[in-house]
Amino acid sequence: MTSAIRFAAYGEPDVLELVQVDAPEPGEDQVLVRVRAAGVNPADWKRRKGLWAGGKALGAPTGVGHDLAGVVEAVGPGVTSPRVGDEVLGTGTETYAELALARPSSLTGRPAEVPWEVAGGVGVAGRTAYRVLRQLGIGPGDTLLIHAAAGGVGIVATQLALAWGATVVGTAGSDNQAFVRELGASPVQHGDGWEDRVRAAAPDGVDAVLDASGRGELAASVALVGGPERVLTIAADDAEEHGVRFSGSDEGVDVSDAFPELARRLAAGDLVLPVWRTYPLAEAAEAHRVSEAGHLRGKIVLLP
Ligand SMILES: NC(=O)c1ccc[n+]([C@@H]2O[C@H](COP(=O)([O-])OP(=O)(O)OC[C@H]3O[C@@H](n4cnc5c(N)ncnc54)[C@H](OP(=O)(O)O)[C@@H]3O)[C@@H](O)[C@H]2O)c1
Image (tube, rainbow, N blue to C red; front, side, top):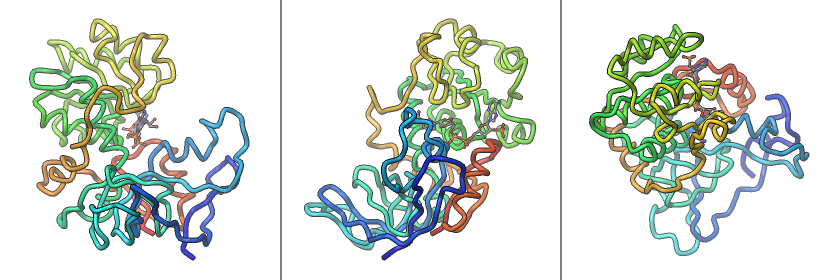
């Protein structure tokens, strides 16, 4: 038996329980990872609340979590890489656990220079940032506006966009203005009047917008860019209304180098991913409360 977080009904954070379960067994195209660190993402608590359940009750107790870093404990039939004993980072299934399954294509080696909690926090946020910048076609000469630049996705997107040659303007709260500047972007206070502050920060205009906030920024973002083609949201539910792309998948882009590039950059110090708080697995409910409160600077990470 092994420890894992499970919930038996949608609801408040306290539905998350630490329980003993059978160790999962890796099937074809799967490896079993002994989890050293598992990042918390808004997707985890949105699912726990039942926001994507369409009003249906949960059928059976289920696990939660996508991010992970750890050591490969076993491999399924036919898997040649990674091998047992390899240290990996990336994404898997129900990763709030001592043992979790992952697909080899969703993992890369953990460089020794990258602390476990950072490696365990980069999964969803890092891969999403990489994907959406590719989908927006960000490159040299672009001025990119990122809404929620101090969140997990925003932090990685800001640094990758700068590394790929763009100029970045990032919205954040007052506590995160200096941090966004340290990342290399021009910080702009979010909230009423943000459009004017962005115009002042980018007098030559904005070429593209990544909305990682989802708090009603789309209409003004389209106006700033002069059309919806290079505005993309990962968080707003009114994208269609504004003719804006909602990105929830890798459609149209090759992201096979996402984790290798992120790992290389983290190891080289070209990419920083601050860890805001860590919690033992047993305190997953508290980790969700803090994530839901919404004003973080970097990742919340569970350490099983
Ligand atoms: N579609 C997809 O594939 C996908 C993938 C990953 C994430 N997402 C979604 O993208 C969103 C961001 O994810 P994340 O992991 O980056 O979240 P996160 O790490 O929890 O960050 C949330 C950030 O939102 C900022 N924020 C709070 N109020 C704001 C406001 N009024 N305007 C602008 N920013 C504000 C906070 O910064 P301050 O403290 O500075 O206010 C905080 O840093 C979530 O809704 C998540 O579900 C979607």
